Image (tube, helix red, strand yellow):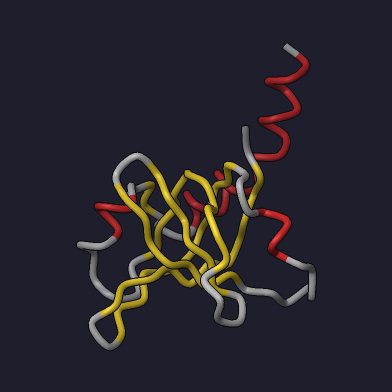
Length: 109
């Protein structure tokens, strides 16, 4: 019971933000079909560093997509590789590529 309560405490800000800003909870496959700038929330794992600034590969059961993690607080986001996370951001379609511009990352179970 305590573990569930702690998880809810950490997820509440993300859920509130998602509901407030018209964020859709989607899979990677669904995100790839959405319009540019669509607000999304995804759950999966950051599987590797993409080798370009603050870009990483994110994967769920439907596929993988490159994500661009906002690094305003100058933390080393590579610590997230291999962890299950919930991300909130915007679909970015540019030069025939689709990626997610991530605003918020919450480490999950």
